[in-house]
Amino acid sequence: MEHPLRVDELVPSEAPRPVEVEVPASAPSPSAAAALTPLPPLPTLAASDVLYLKPSDAQYANYLPAANRRMQLSPALRAVCKTEHAVAVLVDWVRTNGLRFAVRCGGHSYEGFSQSSDVVIDLRGLAGISVDKAAGTVTVGAGASLFHIYEALAAQGLALQAGSCPTVGISGHILGGGHGLLARSHGLTCDSLRQLTIVDAQARTLQADATREPDLFWACRGGGGGSFGIATQFVMNVFPLANTLVFGVSWTLSQSDAARMFAAWQAWAPHAPSTITSIMKVGPAGTGKISMRCIGQSVGSEAELRANLQPLLQLDAPSRPLTVQTLAFLDAVKHFAGTLAYESVFMKAKSDYVLSPLGADAIHAMLAAVAALPAGAIALLCDAYGGKIADVAADATAFPRRAGTQFCIQYYTSWQHAADTPTHLANVATVYAATRPYMPGASYVNYCDLDLPDFANAYWGQNLARLIAVKKAYDPDNLFHHAQSVPVGP
Ligand SMILES: Cc1cc2nc3c(=O)[nH]c(=O)nc-3n(C[C@H](O)[C@H](O)[C@H](O)COP(=O)(O)OP(=O)(O)OC[C@H]3O[C@@H](n4cnc5c(N)ncnc54)[C@H](O)[C@@H]3O)c2cc1C
Image 1 (cartoon, rainbow, N blue to C red):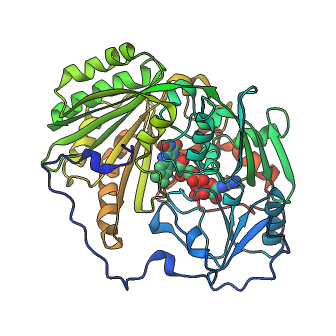
Image 2: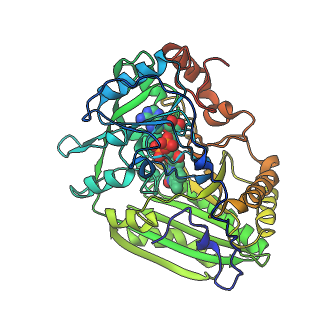
């Protein structure tokens, strides 16, 4: 099994492993800081509507873990909603009482936008999944995780295009876009959205689709989570898919050979047949060299895939040979899932959209910065765009990076011990600084990054003005907000 975010895939076996520093058990962790806010009386709701969890409750800790341990907070109240009614009552309660709150689905926000020390309205009790094979749709509660959706679909020979991490929640993912290994063949996850149910700032339950609340529907396909209301249900288009091809091949290369390989991947991946979605992972090999691993998935023929990979294979001898496997859809999901368990690690990510091919100077600057770091210090995950992603007009949904977008670079690092945080943050910052002169300043909202000086333009570009207008129409008092939510004004 391999996960695109696993940095250790890029550590050659002969390279020194990163040293792990143990933190004493008594060291404070970010999750230890419990909130002190006194809460007003809780709304009266049946146990079938909500599970209220306070720090003294036995089950409280089970619901705490966030994907990024660095951002995890312990709320004074977690309200795990089991019904849409509970969500509406809680929205009314936090608004009337002026309480600070966050909205949580899968808890994978890199910057902890689903965390609060006060109140968390948690969707995980609303995780029902119902497949309508004849209609070609799946209806899911807004607390469902990607793997559970994949599992329900695969049981009926169906599939959905979405990310590879099994525990990512559908809500944050689809609201922000959603790129996965079927993206070039089937589009982004938000492109599958047919209808959503959402509780707005006035605690009204709205149905949004192409004809009802069309502006809200538009904004909820790329505008990101936590800005317009609390989604309670999504109806998505799905498609038949029995088997797919998964592939992977690795190289350990000098910087100049790595530059040639990267240029070859960049010239191919965004323009390859739309059947093929690939990710090029780039990291330091620990010896001044570069580790590269190209992984991906294809819904086309094996002959087509092999012929397409041939130019890369001919450029340099792989350090790990090409593997191509035909797997049932759910096995392909498991292949790229790494693990099905909820993983909680310290992490930091930043991102860039590459909107025109990188020149030799940009590739050189990027690889030189990577090569200078120890093995395992960072992975640059380059997700190919184009294909079906580009078939949707840039203003047809709030997700703006469509035709012309080459790939998205995610600068990613994760670690196990709090004491290593400064080193890892510095490593990411160094590589990111090296590529600044060459990047257009466009980032992916689902790889949120608190360091961005102008996050709104970086995430939404030409769609920002319309997003602000939708925000003003549906949430003029900015009830739903976090550090990088859609602003009410420019
Ligand atoms: C390990 C890992 C792997 C990832 N892999 C991929 C990938 O392959 N492809 C990709 O595109 N992205 C990927 N991501 C990014 C992921 O898509 C985003 O972090 C996404 O926003 C997570 O959604 P969530 O529901 O799990 O997160 P949460 O932290 O619960 O929510 C994210 C945001 O949405 C808001 N929100 C949550 N639920 C609702 C709701 N019901 N209504 C309104 N707002 C809501 C939250 O307040 C928060 O602002 C990955 C992230 C991680 C940590």
